[in-house]
Image (cartoon, rainbow, N blue to C red):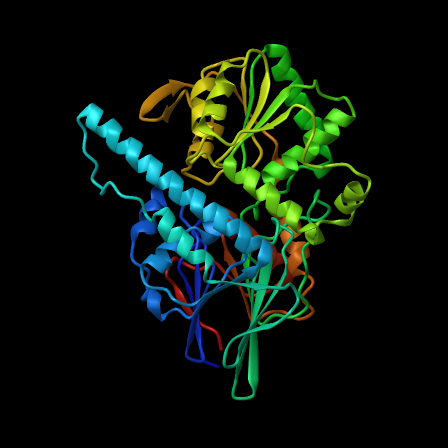
Length: 468
């Protein structure tokens, strides 16, 4: 067999997911994500390791920025192939990429103005990685696929998309290569979700694979129980309300925001929290919520039952969707306690940074993290509770309470990753541990090897392996 696999992202780190598969004269990428760790962001600006025009197709596991965020750059550099994704992933990825481009354009504009005011210059050019026009071009390249229906990528190469249970429309992808009467199957986990989460269906489990690439974001730990989320959320809200501050929640626009609204709805119905003003201050999250409404076929049975009963799981009295800048700014003038949900989830850009600026110095306010914070991101820096934090070029003293609810994670933990991969009826030839910080990947690789005796490898960035 002549199959080459190269790791161009999410190798001993979390973000920038990107794998190149070369076989049967075909070059395809699985994911093309943005690097979000501060120390690795420069990789976003590097040329792709192979000419963009030589890539025939991209298989997109889901719409998070660290999986789709470099697609506009790929197109900008000459990619003219097809991007295969589920309908929900394609629609949401388009929203997310346009938002990313808009944020980059705005950040560059404000950074240039700030530097001119301070008499500074930047070692990097004052231009975004890509523009909104670049992002718009990607949308025409999507080919929307159905779950469980194999598609032909090229001669002797097929792919099938299966429910990953991570975020709306997310997939694990199995690629099957046929050569000379033999076949090999390679499973790309994407980001594996969890069982029994609100809204989402459970992850699909494969029974056969010759090779597996499995994420390890939480490969070194076990989450809190999902059942604890409403209790912890109610505690934080009630304590902050009593103190007279705001609850500021950095949240991913995709899945996490909708899950938060689901839990807030439930707490209000049960009268476990006061009826406070709540804001989703994220135009992207608002648009994504509309995509959710378009695809009820992707909901789990419990959510479908709520809809049939006339309940709206992601809506409740007192909730305001802030679409404009003026609406966002007006939140700062509200007296008393408000719940503010804003992006980005790792605090790397967007409106959340303004709400952090207005609340991080207030001991009565709470910054509540409900999602993974990659090493080097602003969210991770705040989560580590420093004395000061830099926002918009200025140092701010951290006086707000910093809280975290881990049970919210849409990523499988160590036990759930094992549950997902243990459905294989035969040992795979190799398991590649990806999409985790080095310590997490090593911990999960050790755990999986001890459990199964399988050949587990933690690939290096830009490493090439031959799949025989």
